[in-house]
Image 1 (cartoon, rainbow, N blue to C red):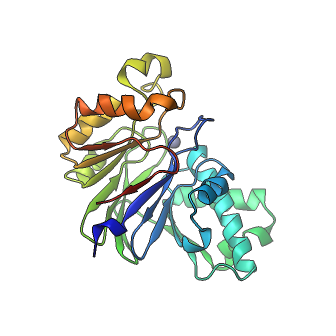
Image 2: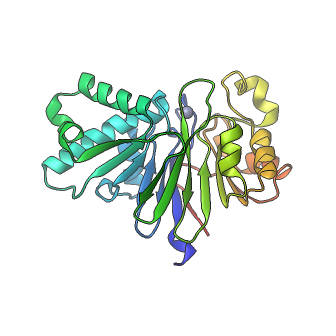
Length: 273
Ligand SMILES: [Zn+2]
């Protein structure tokens, strides 16, 4: 299978409180699977999908990392839209959501509190399935093998995942906090490592990355180097330096990491080759 059939499209690249880009979420595409990871903080997810020319009717798998607003609120909107599409006969098959028990509980509760039942009925009666994963549980999507793992967050229960792509490449998503022991285990020797990097090292006092339990670019790059990753994708950043973000983040990361460095903008697609 040609590797260039796999890609990541960043729907958003920003941290929680951004206003100049969308919250971090993305779509992992392989020949047989479109897996969405988180959905950002609101119904701006529809605009991002539209601008990325990704049709929601083609997404049947959605991984939710954790319950924070900038990751899970968009999922409520996805459930609402998919439910409407199912009712209109425009969405064929099911939407399978994969998450830990806390995220499943939050999604069920939010839907029940925020919408009349008919707007999320497939979540109750089939059509939209909440698949609760245990730590280190593996699920098989059509052509992706995905293992969820607890990143040992200091804030709230959060899962990252390690995905084996159809060509055998391993892609590890570390979530939106600094890499800890489980992340090191699943990220070691990864072909693709996805890490948060809140800001440049010199900007740490300005943005308080550490106080917010986030990494600087230098921290993330040193971690990727230690784990012998081949490609590093940085996201979940501040949005006050967007104009120079790619150039300056890449330069700082290159001082510590010798593989390929990606600092994508919203809506950018990275071929996984
Ligand atoms: Zn976040």
